[in-house]
Image (tube, rainbow, N blue to C red; front, side):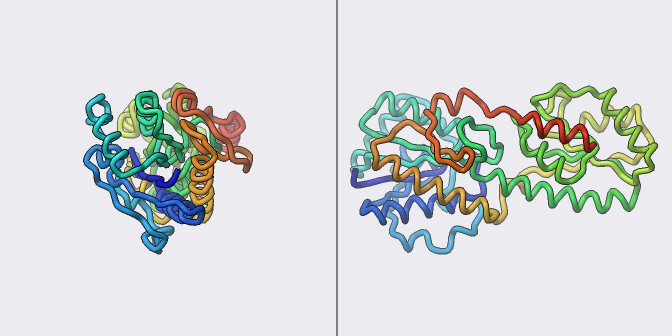
Length: 323
């Protein structure tokens, strides 16, 4: 294997640039050329390639987003699109690829390798949702929860000044990991996640108890995929039955995707990028690099995509006890 490619795909996540940097520099360290593929699978189809040198990734480790950009490619879902991508890869003499992304990225990689087994792909988990099986933490998650925590802290200041009840919606369409940790860290009265059914009557009871304890303000953290319909709908329902506080809604949105990656993020992403290159050079393919209990692991793409990480029971208990 002489030429390794790297790309980012799906939703961007802080730390992706640190991972790109690690792939490029470690590949050169082991005497291999590196090709950057811009705009993910779409760039692969359109031949949007660039030869990377170690200096190409200077001064990017602290940047959020991804210098290679990202895209959700509909063309790659067709056999014709994948064939065009394969032809472009062979034209550039690429036989190994590091894919940085989430379950959609790895699902596409798995299908592609079944059709073209002479191309080896290894993945690095890049998603703020932290929902991939096979790693304790994904690239982007640590930064996202710290961004959410800081925003909620700021909201709590103004909530206390006006006796307000804030419903703060964080990202997490299918998983509530951001909501759970950010909620615990900010002392939220309630945390609503997709993994648990929301009992609005019980929520109102909890908020009533907080009011009786003479709390100046309350914070409810809501994952966007909560089964009760998200922060706006829940706030409306609660507001019709509970009028002790002035109710406000704040949707954090895409600020959780941006920003400088944390120290742990940069280190973790760097480690994963290096290990992905090593895996390719050692003949691994069709696996995602993960870190479990500070140990490098390899999980097949099919398992990483189909088996989502479970929410830790002890964290759910902590949230319940401290609310």
